[in-house]
Length: 222
Image (cartoon, rainbow, N blue to C red; front, side, top):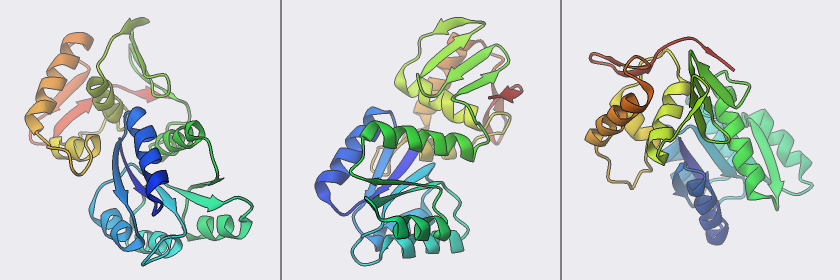
């Protein structure tokens, strides 16, 4: 999953990036409102962490621009502690959640994951697909009740398909959402990862849809 962090305080931005990358997110940074506005309108993000006090263009204006442009990615707004007026303004501008500074990184990561799940209609951390169960919080996968050992990239690709279960996902979309902007992207890597997943999960779960990409087959619940 790919996340945009919009924060002008260099030290906090670095901490946020490190924590999110440790949680296996691909992370882009924007240090001001103008760059954030551009990235949010031109790049596909699964979620955004947005500070409101930004140089060049304030966070609320950025958020309003995104929503006016039809950008629907979930946005977690960072506010000053006790800044209830900011919280109300943020929610009215289209924010999906807020977190007051200072905050625990573990809570921020949990909230981001929850926003992404809800954006795709999954209320619970576990996503089930026939005999396959994917726990997006514990990062555990079971097949017919037996644990399946996956690498980080294998899990991230499988989890992305699981969030869009039953829908074809193109290689381009997978690449855009699994890697940060400055990563050397190679679509051939995806084919290798899908091949490894099929060997571990069986051929029937990840389908190749000609001309469209890959699809995790089956009915989901969770």
